[in-house]
Image 1 (cartoon, rainbow, N blue to C red):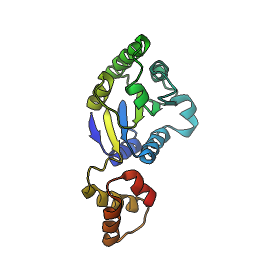
Image 2 (image 1 turned 180 degrees about the vertical axis):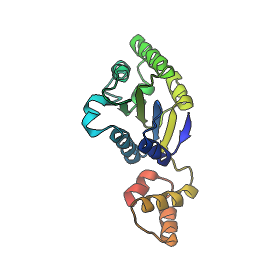
Image 3 (image 1 turned 135 degrees about the vertical axis):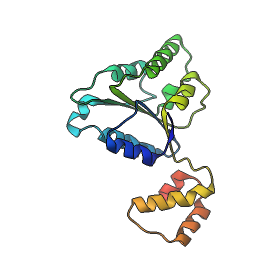
Image 4 (image 1 turned 60 degrees about the vertical axis):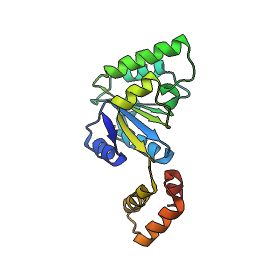
Length: 192
């Protein structure tokens, strides 16, 4: 599916036209949590209890996540499965036979993802060399959070956050903040 911005995904969520698999990836935990919350809000509040499942990758196995994703939605067209800290299931440290079977079953599920589910994997950055992680990076809709590549991205990021908060900032203040804080999204968010 390719890379997408947080803003583009927010528009997609608002339209209700969701893809099957999202990989929300990056160091900015606040932005990732905010985006996961927006996905959840796409389902009517009264029906969330039936159609939204949240898991923590360090606490849930791929088998449990798969069972939730296979469950048909109730009174809505799509079920939503959100996996926080998904790096624990995407690149498992354990190499047992059960883990390998779960990974293969999960990969098969992803390749043939049913139209009734949207799977949102919220993850810290990971290595990307294992079979499952390679597939996700290539085929899922990847949303990078807090991914400021260089100091040149910082002024744009600051202006966008200030605008989103309905505030104003002078160009000189943007330059000073950019110079002092650099391309660390977590630090920038904390300072703003």
